Amino acid sequence: MTERQYENLSALMDSELDTAQELTSLDDLVCDDAMRRKWQNYHLIRATIRREAKTDMPIDISAAVAAHVANEPIPFA
Image 1 (cartoon, rainbow, N blue to C red):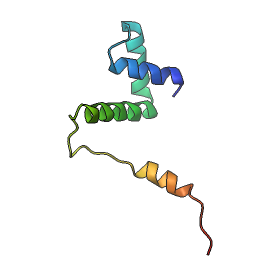
Image 2 (tube, rainbow, N blue to C red):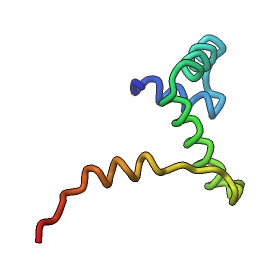
Image 3 (tube, one colour):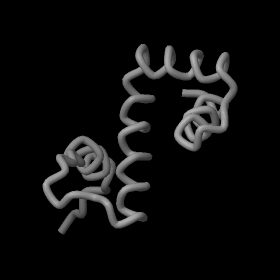
C-alpha cells in the first residue's frame, strides 16, 4: 500500500472523499489484502476508542507475533 492509499482509506472511513475517490478506494480495498487488513484494524481501533468493541471480536495477531519472534536475536549461553 502506498502512503496515499493509507490516507484515502482513513478519509473513506471518515466520509471525507468525493464520489470518484471513494470508488477508487473501494476498488483498491477489494483488490488488496493488505488494505483489507488495514481497514479491519482501523475499524477495530475506532470501535475500541468509542468503547464499542465486542469482547468476542476475532483478532488474529499470530502472524505479527511470529514475525517479531523470528527477528529476535538468539541468545547464546
